[in-house]
Image (tube, rainbow, N blue to C red; front, side, top):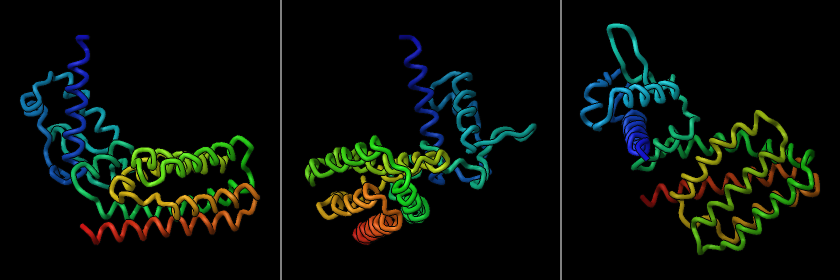
Length: 233
């Protein structure tokens, strides 16, 4: 019981400081004063040290003798870290992130679909079919169920490619899709489910080129939906 408050304070400090850095409130090369953090968040020196260690592992802060702790240059940030991805969307729409996500998806997922069409197992097909069924069942009513089904489908597709390096990208795809789906409300329409079904059909029939093309079409539609939502802001 006694560890819980400390753990909560630690998480709050990591999230608050990480968000300030990623959103630019604390710019690169800005000094980070551990003593001031102790006072501001009401935590111990140990908690501050541990929080800075976590942020250092994500590439967000650095330290030098006589200089102390400071915000690291952006090129050192672990931009694919799930926390860093979420912090970029902390309290605003990050249009650059959405654009970059679309580019990354176009690079990765059509290739994954092509590989899945030649490597998928019966278990992979069952997982894809379950996700598609959940997507259709959710319809346009339950946003949380829509997002969960969408994530399950794309995760199952990456797994069906049976490439460990591609599978590592599931983290950025999952976090990115979750944030995108929160931004672009109600995009998992019947048409969207049908486009996912086209991918599944090509994978099931072991047609790699058709699977690649269907996935590319699906992602291009997703990118177009994002552009429409951005204009409505």
